[in-house]
Image (tube, rainbow, N blue to C red; front, side, top):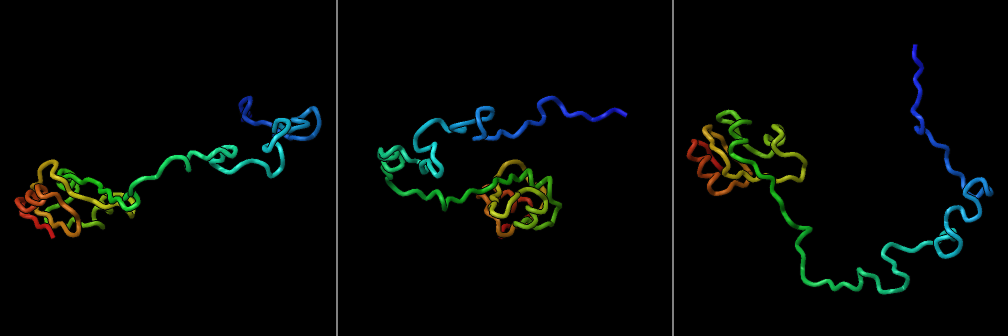
Length: 143
């Protein structure tokens, strides 16, 4: 039986510091003097040595609605044609079950890409106006 051998360089010895000249001795890789060489030394994030930091120099203007922005995942009529049988109901749960949308926070919107030949009932999902027309033309219903 062949013995399993780990490749050269697969394991590396831990670097010990402050144990004399044979290791990383004296300053232990921290340089010689200064704030960063001391224990507990260092500066906070964004600190620029006393100069007014960038995040305080740059003016903040206006209002951003970004945290409240709502993004929709587009579902095409072609996706509904392939995934659903005639007479089925299209809602949030069924879209998740069929894998058309993922994640709990995702909101779907049906867009008018492709053709629909099956009568489907759409409940609680946003539709574009043309998509709603095509769903109704196929004998379906949008609630």
